Image (cartoon, rainbow, N blue to C red; front, side):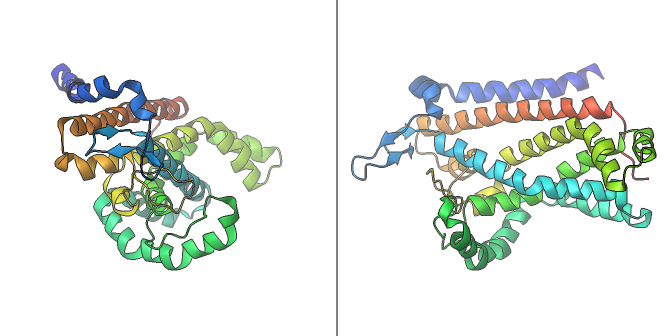
Length: 305
């Protein structure tokens, strides 16, 4: 049993050591500036971040694209996921509770590539023909929706598909921490004359807030590392734009799209260094989320009844 447990630790160490060794060339060439620097194109005088032909590499547009798409996905998914959890835990009829919980968690079992195909067939045409023009018309003044992307791809499309993918994770864990709140807490709030919504807000959500934050962070960890669905709809352009409708790319997407066709050892090492950064960030985010969830549930299993 001890060997079985140590094998998991050994796998993580082997993955980390391989990433460190294979990214050594990029570390020596660019150092920490790999995540911040950019050159200026001599012809267009625009920032040049990723140029495999001339051997210039910067992870800045990929870090930017990963953060923008992930946080925008959280902005869309968190209200819906918390609302679903509140309904299933406090308001849903007992006969429907198990069915709705199963259907919600079923979203997490759908392969990423299926989400990507659905996004290309359904989401991007909707964005191109209906959503993007409306955003440009009414919110274009803000600068965040300044340009209508004629392809329907971009940060917003990637964020929407990410929001759908992380919704069951956040909802399931939120429901778990809400169920862990003692029923005596609910009864005490109701006994003081609170309404049903006041009981949920003050007696349940307030006590479960640390665990809910942990669930959100765990959803963020999933969004940061998502690959195929994002690659298919984000546009795969190593540029930084203020507009959320513009094309971009992410750390996971650039590794998936370029690693097999890397033109040089430095190119391959730069991609590996991006993978190493993503590996470290994902582990930290997931560990923090698990600690926050454990702080509320204390190992209490979720109940549907």
